[in-house]
Length: 314
Image (tube, rainbow, N blue to C red; front, side):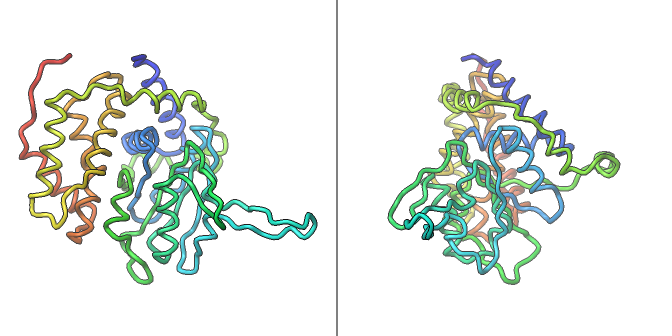
């Protein structure tokens, strides 16, 4: 494996996004890991922490198009997928694509839309295609959805069912910046202006290569066994519903991508400990009615109780 290509790819994207988003290198890297693995992100945080700016900057860094959809109770599935309209001048129907045909899509406050609209979004995420009036249209290869929901507001919302939350690859939170970082943001130019100047840091060919080769990372039997010990522990650890097989596959992919972007062709238990909270916590918290922080805390306690395998480095 050409490990230098992975680290260069990570450094270029993270450096570009960090021009706009200060002090969130770890979160940017996790969004990048999710993108490399072809997954989608559920971002749960209080308003005003930079969720929209993060995704705008990320879209520019990878050279992709961006769209933002504000989810409301009256939003219809066709508002996402697009419609066929009759063009009187040409005397035929034409397809007008919706915002899901962009590379990077921000579904803002996804829990404010009705279940029918949520289902249309999640179907596009899972199938990577959209069907309108019987005609199926594929979405772009770089298609990434970041859905946000406000944990402080419950009036007029439709919480995502557990089965739908499980379809998100990761759940993240940006959190507040440190004092010095926030003072830096207050004094600098407007973030929108900074994002408008971000140039693509990687090409489509770079992204395709990384996506095609990160699965070559070696996961030894000991490390894979440690991963399964954790997954099985959630199924008997007092949670109403443990991690699904989809969740185990997602963690395996995230571990490989984390190792590759760190410049290694083999995975370590530390990769599992790094990725497990964001990949697994939302898969065990919905049924238990736990908040994000509580679910992560319980998961970390579970991780600490599982013996870490010790093996010589390859």
